[in-house]
Length: 68
Image 1 (spheres, rainbow, N blue to C red):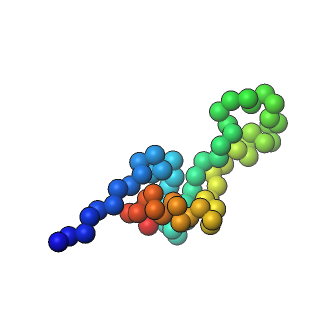
Image 2 (tube, helix red, strand yellow):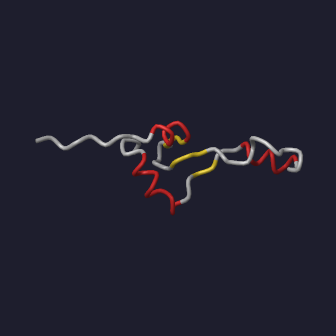
């Protein structure tokens, strides 16, 4: 009997992208509202995408089993 396929968490797949080297890129939070109290340099640095922390990779791999 064949092993069951694992389901990809679609919300995670839409929010994150796996790079060619196997790391995971994600967007940063904090750029949707209350922007008047945040400085220009802070808002500019929030535009850039960042890598998922190594502590969270176990959960990300579980959410996206076929992304790696």
